[in-house]
Each structure stands twice: as C-alpha cells, then as structure tokens.
Length: 345
Image (cartoon, rainbow, N blue to C red; front, top):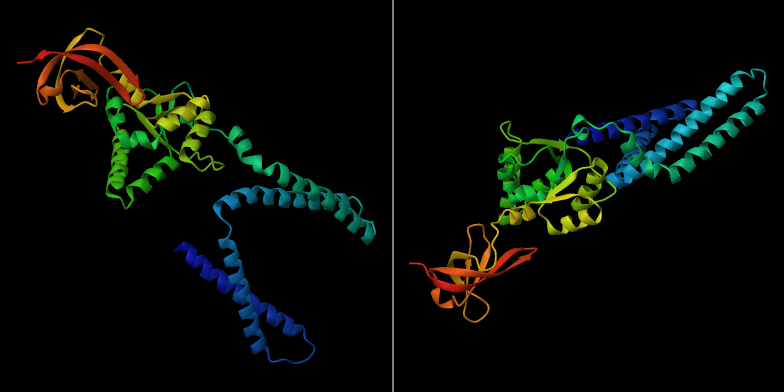
C-alpha cells in the first residue's frame, strides 16, 4: 500500500512539474500565447516521463541493485570530492581568469571521476566482503561459546527438541533468516505432506525459543547474497562466523566437510546411540516380514535397527531367539545379521 501511494505522488509531482516548466517557457516567449493548452501538454509530458521512470525501475531487481549501488556511490562520491577540491583550490586564486577556473575545475573533476569509475569497476563488487570483515558482530557472534547454524532439515525432523531437552547441546543455535524463510515457504506449500512438515518445523522452532528450553536460539539477519542455494549460504556463513552446521541432510553434510566446516549430523548421533552388539551375542526380535533371500525373516529393534534372521522365514509374527553373526554399518543406518536359535515361548 505505501508503494502505491508513493507511485501516485510521484505521478502527481511529475505532472505538476511538467506544467510548471511549460508555464515557465511560455512566460519567456516574446509573443502572447494561450497558456492552457501548453500547460496541459506539459502536464501530460510529465506523466509520460513518470511512467517511463516507473517502468524502468521495475527492471532493477534486488540483485542488480546490490551490484550497481556501490559502483554508483563510488562514482558520485569521487565527483563530489573532485568538485569540492577544485572549489577549494580556486578559493586561493581569486584573481584567476574564468578560463583558468574552468580548466582547474574540469581537470580536478576529471582525475577524481576516473578514480571513482575505476573503483566502481574493480573494487565495488568486493565492498560487501570488506564491510563484512570490519563490521562489528552482535554479541552472540563473539566469545568462546559454540555457535551452531541450524539447517531446515533439522527443524523439520524434530529430534532436536529431545536432544536439547537432554542438555547435551551447549552454545547458541543460530537460525538464519533465509532458513526461516525457506521453512515458511514449505509451510505454505500446496502439497499436504510438505505443508505439514513446514508447520512442524515452525512449531519445533517455537518450542526451542521457549524460555524454559535448555538452549539459546537467535535469529540472525546474515545472508550471503552472492550465493542463492540455502546449503551454500549455510556453508559460507559457517565459515565467516566460525560456527558448526547442525543438519541431517546427507548432501549438505558432504559439502560442508569438503569445505572444512565441522558438521553435527543428527543421524550420525542417532546411529552412535544405538546399542552395540557383538558376534555370537544372543537377542530376541519379533519377525514381521520375509527377507530378500530364501528362508530369511526380518524384524526391527526398538530403535529401528533392522535385524535379518537366517532361518526365520517360517516364524512371521512371532518373537524368536537369534544369535548375531555380523553387523553392517551403512550411511542409512545399521543392519544386524543373525541366525535363528529358537522360538520364545
């Protein structure tokens, strides 16, 4: 709404300005002229110019603005400094001829104009990195506490709430604004399942922000604009803040490790907390489906670990005694291979 009001005021101002210019030109005319048609035409030209400007502004995207703004500022500042310096030099030459004054002004402005254009073309694109390096961070960015950048997948997963309640997470959980925006986009999705996941992630974040929570959560505005993907933004931000990345996304995990960023993967934590079993150890498991190989049965432990039972195909729906033969650890989890020992009464 404020943008529409601003557009209307700009159109009105340009119309009035066009009418004023027309009246000014008519007033300077030596011959008498009926002013009303000319004033109306000037107002119409003002509106046309305003429409052209408004249409041109629509093509200036956020990305284009962020790239052109530093360059434009560099050129303007250089020209202003050059002009002011030339005026200062001419202040000490009050008796200089008019040609000399013009020569001095043009020469100084030309030199500073070149400097501004050169900086705009070669250095302005790096201003953001320079400002980020010298910019003082908020209090939660410094200190000895451990900072952890939270990925969207962690909030959707939900296990972070139980982990935080256990007190095993220390330091501050940083949720970048672009992660929160991605979570909101998921919550607004037309797909029912995707929308439910997004809303679950928002609920998890709200629970973590509760005063009674065992962790501190901070929403930060840092957003590396030179990259678009959320994963790339997290990696770049983690490097600049010296933070760890908290995720359960396999691809982000690998990319962050390649970039030398320390990753806390919740799936790795879950696998590490599963009870350890050794060959020849006995255990009980309920068989719920047949295995891929002949005479195999498959069951699951309480933590979700798959147990493959050799010789258990005929005991579907029953709890059997098994002996561990081997354990296979994969990226997806752990599988325990066993052989049938006896039926649990």
